[in-house]
Length: 294
Image (cartoon, rainbow, N blue to C red):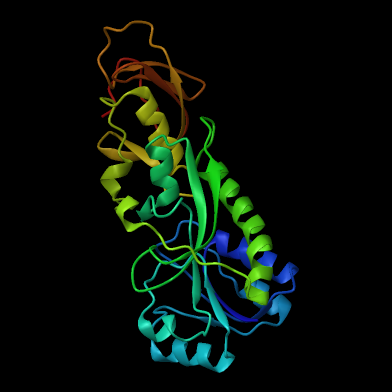
């Protein structure tokens, strides 16, 4: 089974390496040389060079040059894991077995953008890992393989990303032989049960201390590395916040946003219901006790 692989993030790298360790016949790779979009960007060319796999850097995956590159490789199937572009009909119809995509959520639930970030920001207890056959829609093709992924209170973007990747690698070990021998099954998604998450914007990363401590904790852990980080404003400048802990304030009659104390570069701030201790941040000048963060 001849496989063409498309991807440009750390997840793509992990999956491609596992495919190669399973002796999958990867005949070509399309990746990116750089990305202004993906915080977890990864150039796959080094793996290709090491394994003598033809590869091509792409900007617009749908242009004729890239389509011709894929055609010449004569793939039976295409894997597109971690590539944030909609594929048009010219590519969707190139391989006889179709294109397998990936979404780190339990489809049909939570289609759309930033599924790891939204799952954490919303405080979900569980998400999923879904491989599916791509079609003209977004994340709505037939499911090839799906697994559940538990989310604990201590998880953040990095640990959940790792959990999902580990789960996906095990799924590949399960479904790759089925694709190779033709015993795989396709499960149609129930579109009536679906919802679609929107694209996150800069405002979504702003910590508002009128929020409760749990909401702030969830927002910070959702946007921490490998993503761009949540932020507050101090001296009219945005400051990245990478980690907080929930805490109890010394008194309930303290206004939200007030700095209760500063010690060892940790900043204790009152929020709506409780307080948070900011433990990892990018303050160049620390706020003082009694000042306000907004």
